[in-house]
Length: 549
Ligand code: SF4
Image (cartoon, rainbow, N blue to C red; front, side, top):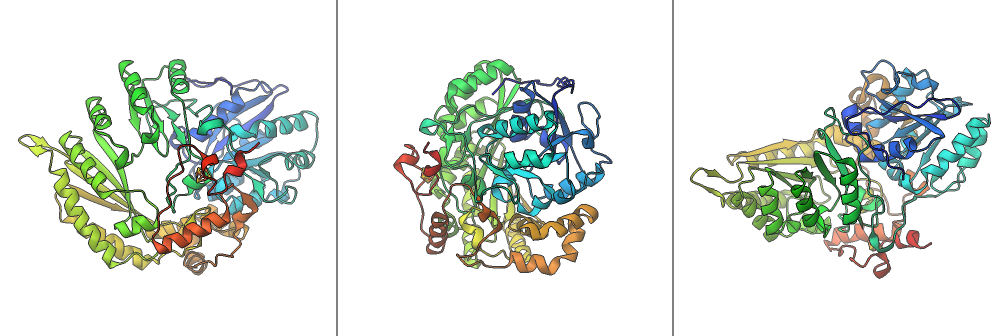
């Protein structure tokens, strides 16, 4: 991929003459787009080509008209619009964006250019609720085929071909879903590499003090996760797990010369070269920050190093209230390893410990909450290990509890979601447990919003009227109108033979594997992580067939 890096500088706007103008849209606020690696990887891919002229767009419902942040041009002037879909809330934003640009919202009503294509994590997961607004979806990692789609679009546009002619050709490309034209199921495209290596790790094109991660160069350490938690969509759709190599990471830092680096990945401590890389950054006086860590990956030396180099806060995921639930969800979690990590975090005076948990598991009950009550007592004891004269140890433990949203492509895709009353009771219970301890803080997700997220994440094209209403009136208002439909859909338990909208895609993970994992959830049986030797030594989930040439 071409090397395009601007740091804090603004990219120069290319002359359009002869080039295909491409609007790269992140349908949320700039601070989120500037902190999203996938969107920036696509920017780099397009900006490095001489036959395309890319400009950036962000969008919030309060914006008046979508305009390029690079030139101020209207979205409606661009013959190719690429949308990055990251969260279900992006669906109504896409509709309001098109309306504000005076572009027909229904693809069927747009006979000619612009061509509106989408990609991003939701394109792997379930793009079907927003499909009526799109000309096509690229299902896969951008590095694994988007270039070819752009070749065809640019050639067709330069030759004066109609959009319909271009789509006929694009529909046949690997990874492309063009309604009515593509062969289905559409196979996800991923970068194939030997020995589970992450070829060309993603990194930021821009750093900005507007971004959520201020002035931080984000670099991808690993993609995919070996642990197979049964609720985790990212673990499924990015299979198999792949790690960057040290030389590639160092080369990126040397090229970009950042002041701060943010390491992004699903299993950071699984990367064997992490300690060497962090030491290497430290000797160059480059600050760094790590996303969520696994308790069992926190070695004594890593914790000591992190504290010595200025880290004040550690984030760990507990996920379930009891060991029984953690086993059912296939969370590879050892209570002993967790508590000893908390003790060491306290002894090293980290100050803040953030914990994440999910509630609403199938079968979760009062016994699980009672076990959690006792567990919090043990966490409190462990956090006192570092307290003493003028030493506070961990002086703040904050627990964030979210609601289980059954996601496509996970073994939990068949399960029902709890009703609002159940979640309110659970949240009250957790808040009460934490409230007994000094220096512990609780925050809980709004169950109504989580249920809307489920509704959007496992619906199909029939949801488009709901999305159009949400674009007009807001999600909360639309949810009131569609209250009965939401309750019926999210509280439904699906038969294992049910055909979901996303079955029109093939992301590689087999249905047989997902079904067997769902059965193992009920039997509370664990599945081991992906072996280090990779798919050839395993062949369990079906993804290996994607890796054969
Ligand atoms: S085939 Fe095995 S190693 Fe490969 S992604 Fe699936 S579970 Fe992991």
